[in-house]
Length: 376
Image 1: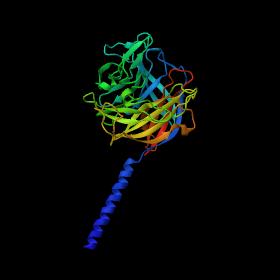
Image 2: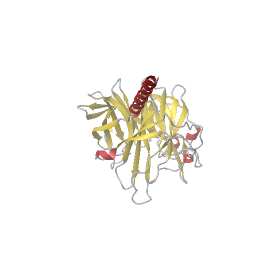
Image 3: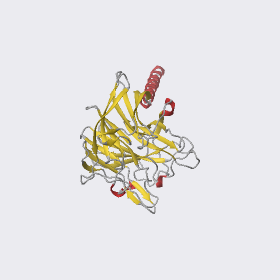
C-alpha cells in the first residue's frame, strides 16, 4: 500500500510539474529583434497625393500586398488609403513601393468633406484591416468632439466595411458609450477608436480607445496611467459583444515647458493568439521630438467583461500586460508609431513584424517603416 501511495504521489507530482511547465510555456511572451528601418522622404508625391499621415497598416499574405491608412481629413487631398509592396531582402526592408491610392467613400458613394471647411461631413481615418475571407476592408474613423465659440462638432467614431477600392458596404453598430456628447461623458476628442485588428479566423475584431472615456477616469499623467477600454466585435453580427479594461502606462517624459501638452495612449493593436493582443503604447511630450513607444503582450483571458459597466473605476479585473519591447532601447529615433502588422515569414521561418509612423504631414517628423523578427 505504501509503495502504491508513493507511486501515485510521484505520478501526481510529475503531472503537476509538467502541467505547470506547459502553462509557463503557453504564457511565454515573444521577443522582438530589430532588423532595420526605411524612411519615406517628406512630401513624396504619389498619384497626385502627398504621402504622409500613415496611421494604420495591414498585410494581405496571399497577394503580398500591404494596405495603409492615411489620416488626411481631406485637407491636402481626398481622404484615402494606399496599397504598397514592401521588399524584404536578407532580413531587411530594401524598398517600399506604393501601388495605388483609393479615396474613402461615404454611404452615398461620395468623398468625405474637408475638415477645415465642412467638419461635420469629414472623417478622421485611423486604422484599417483586410478581411481575407470576405475580400473586404474594415476601417476606423475616430470622429471628433470640438466645443468652442467658433466651432461645434459632435461626430461619432465609426467602424466601416468597404471593398478594396474604397466603396462603402456597411457599418458596425457601436455601443452607446462611444457616442460623442456635449457633457463630459463618453469619448474625449482625439482619444477615441484608434487601433484595429482581426483574430486569425476573422470571426472577431478588436478595437481600442486611445485614451479613457470621461466616466472611466483621468488621462495618463506623469505619475499614473489612465484606464481605457478594448472592444471585441462579432464580425458576423457586426456588433460589440464584449469590453475589457486596460491600464495605460504613465507619460514617459515631463513636457517642456512644464504644463504643456503631453499624452500616452494606445496607437495600434495586433492580434497575437487566443485572447492575446500586441499593444502599442505611444507617449509624446512637448519639448521632446521623439516618441517613447512600448509594445506589450496583453492577455484578455481573465479580464472582466465590462460591456455593461458604467465605469472602469469599479472593482474589476483588468487585462494583464507584459512589456515586450521599449523602442527607446534601440538607440534610434522613433517617431509617431501608429500602425502594426505581421508581415511575411523570414528566411528562417520566423514571423516578421512591421511598424509604420504617422508624420502628421509635418516636415519635422518622419514616415518610418520598421522591421522586426518575432522570436517565439
